[in-house]
Image (cartoon, rainbow, N blue to C red; front, side, top):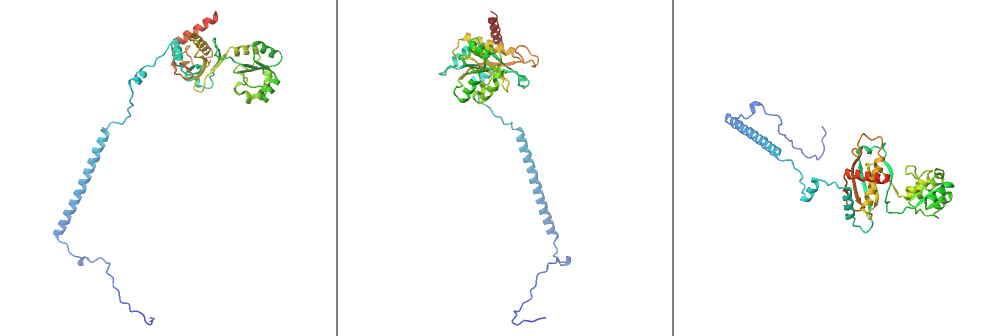
Length: 318
C-alpha cells in the first residue's frame, strides 16, 4: 500500500442493511391487528363495488333518457300564402297566360315574349337531336338585314329575293379589312364561296353559314325569303329545354297566340324518330311556360296548346 504525505483521515462509513429481515427477526402481528386490517380491506372492497354499481345504474339511466328523447328536426315557418301556393299550382289557358304576361311586363322597353319548353328526360341523350326553324306568322318584331356570299346567277337570285348585302370574294375582303361592317343579322352563302368565307370566322362568329342552320345552301332565293320572313331557330340545350322568343310583348294577343301555335306545330314536326313510343304530347313535352324578358312565367295546359296548333294548321290550309 502506498502512503501519501498530508493525506486527510477518512473515517469509515456504514450503510444500512438492505437485506430483508429473517422471519424470526420480524415483529409478530397480533390476531386483533390482522382482524382490523381484514375488516378495513373488506369495507374498502364493498365501497368500490358500490361506487361501480351506482356508476353503471347512472349510465343506464342516461342511455334510457337519450333513447326517449325525440330526434331533432328543423321546422320551417311558412305563412298562409306560401302554403296555399304549394297546395296546387295553377295551369293556365294560353289566351289567359298571354294576357297575364302582357300585364306583368312593366319595364321601360319592349320585352320579348319568350317560351320555355321542358322536354322529356329521354331527350337528354346526345344521339337524339331536336332542332328546327319556325316561320312566325306575325314576325319577331324586328327587321332583319341579310348578307349573301354568292357569285353569278346565285347573286342575282339573292338580290331579287331582297338580300341587303350581296357579294363574292371582294365582299369577303372588305369585311376582313373592316371596310364593310358586320351590321347584318343573318348570313347566307353558297358552298362554292365557303373557301373564301371561312377566312371570316373571327368576324362573323355565330353568323357563319352552316348547313344545320340552313344558311349554307344552293337554294339562295328560298333561304333569303325565309330569313326575311323572320324564321326563328329553336333547339334543345343540354338539359333538354327549348328556349325561344316568339315576338314582342307589344304584339296583340291574337298575334302572339298564332306565333305560339306555329311554334308548337314546328316542335311536333321536329320530334326525333328515335324517341320512345309516346303520344302527341305525353312522353315528349313535360311542361310549357310563357313569360316576358323580365317577368314571371306561367304554365300552359296541353289542351290550349293543341288548340293553338290546330288553329294555325287550319289557317295555313286556307
